[in-house]
Length: 432
Length: 191
Image (cartoon, rainbow over all chains, first blue to last red; front, side, top):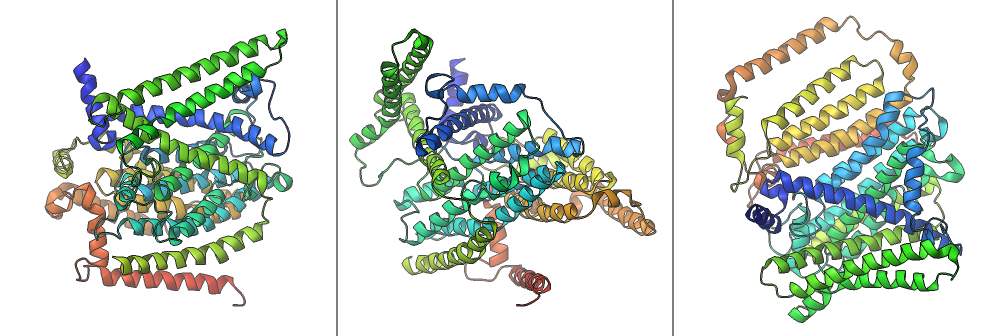
């Protein structure tokens, strides 16, 4: 039995399950990613409501659990128990299938997201093309939902959303191409479309592509960062669900579980596009400064970060316990929050033990485990920064008008991305 | 299970990789493609037909992946399932569905359509019967990793010499450019 497990661990650490042809581990990875993304969406939901509230000097959810920590769970239960209404005049089958299209598109993308050099379900030769292609299928779900509702607001929302997504896909694609060009510039014939290959190219060239050919990489990244907000229909480009104009846009007629599937798909798509940005421009799974601070001591210090993060979270929870009013009314909340702090502290302790046990990079099981945790941690950390930016944008900027949005997409972003693409090619040829 | 298909798939596996592409996947994808293809022509509602066509295109994408042609699969998703079908849906939604669903599904051209379908069927049957003799052996045995590079080499040429299909490729792109310009001129009254 241990031999059996170890052989799988051996496969797991060398290559992705897809490359090893191990359907068992591929399935396990899929389950882990599915669970992880679902939990991340719930956490994001809570954080968004809290952060938005604090931006506007409100408290946000405070009633369900300490500081509203259990609010996402309460929301999920509420949505599941709610009546699932299908409008009488709606196209029943299409109405039923529309949220699933969006959800499938959003989650299929995760098969090629590189959480580490071997921490991905599969590494496709055409990874980035696959990601962009499948995530562009998500718009089908929105269009079909808007049509099937047989109502005015959803239809207008769907039309707006698809026009917007199609126009921003062009600028987005050109920005991605300029990043892909950078993978092949140092030596001829090393260009790649594989997500893992792109991160490894940044590793070999010793520079994140956002800083390469300054400021070309930065501009391409900026275009992608703007286009991805439009792609996911988030504020300030949330024309498809503009509350003040269209009630709720394409999902006006949806309720209960089906509505929550739309929300899940939207947030999963946000995480997915942020992962593309992280992998293409921000060095993917690499820790900061792997080329400048490359002594083993630095490796060790940076490998402490996962544990430190969880210690920090535990400390915040403990402060919450201490600051809770000394009234019997808060007794259960206090116990719950203390238990939560204890769980966080335990995870932190576990991570600390792994970081210390695997500090020598000698290929032992502990060392490989430590490396895997580091890769996933830095990747998720960078993605989490993007998630916070999404909230920040929403709190900061007012919504664009629709014609302004199209004008920016076609008359500003597209020409700039074309110029950046051509300039990248020219500079690349001159340098190499 | 067709033994020729099986050996072809196994020989395509590179670097001692275990094949994930099993007959089971093939029959599921092929069945899905045929079933949804039938749905495309039998549904009265045009939007249902379009959705069924998307399922067909996606299952064909799966077949491309099984043939170790990932680039073709990605382009299929990007261009057909993502781009063209979205435009299809756009157009269909602007059509009055209620009136069009009452239209007759067949007009007097059906014998011509039947003849064309029979000719295509005959072609497929002959390809199935003759099998390997029709295609050169080397076509299937490209390793997955070099497939995309191979396509690039054919289209753009490699090592200083022109590719096999560079000229045809450029002509096709010129044609597309003309089509784009035509669309702009037709929609814009004043340029």
